[in-house]
Amino acid sequence: MSSIFIDANRKQIAGRRRIDFSLKLLFLVATSIGVIALMALLIDIITDGIHMIRPELFNNFPSRKASEAGMKSAIVGSLYMLLIMTPLSFLLGVGAAIYLEEYAKKNRITRMIQLNISTLAGVPSIVYGILGLTLFVRELHLGRSLLAGSFTMTLLVLPIIIVSAQEAIRSVPKSRRDASYALGATKWQTVSRSVLPSCISGILTGVILAMSRAIGETAPLVMIGALTFVAFLPTGPLDSFTVMPIQIYNWVSRPQASFQELAASGIIVLLVMLLLMNLSAILLRNKYNKHI
Image (cartoon, rainbow, N blue to C red; front, top):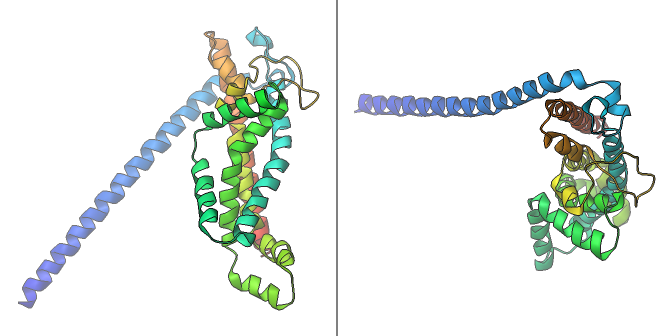
């Protein structure tokens, strides 16, 4: 009787091991397909565009001649948009997260607000473009300006920043708050001197990753009417502008092979910028984690 039981147990274990091996192999194949496809795209882009990475690409404005075309206005426009977006998104997003986690009462209204914020984080970006077109371009009469584009992209990243900042604030142990209150600190002193320093790495990581998403978005800016051909630099927040994804889209839409190569070089520049932003998020997180 015991031998039958042992044999059945062995067969069961062997079956589980076969299932485990099969699932592991399936996951490995699925991961390999994604990595191989990504590597193929990167190799194709680098092969087409690496020889177009030259000083003229950064110093020249867009042109109808591929040999003279550059993306100076698009690079500067993207940087200007980030300069407006980043402080605005940080203040509004982190402020909302602090209020919802530390000050707001946990009732039905708060839960409804939280549900709406989480839902907005997954809304397609084109919806924010329509909202920006209606609110900023038409109602506030900002036109196709850098300010309208920055406000629209701020709306796009706000739910992401709020959710990531809330998760970072929740990760702070309750004992740290209790210790601050025991020493006679007020609510704001506890939040500003105990909670925020403990979770600032997570907050900054979420903000930088949200900015890296915004810098690669095209649909919302196309909806508000950002120009595809700008041969000047914006001198103020109400000037017309363009950004790197729109300039790349303009080059890709042209049939000439030389413009396709220019688009590939622009993609390489944009990828490098995104990788640098992601790297800075990792470095900031590691730096602040060492001081906690």
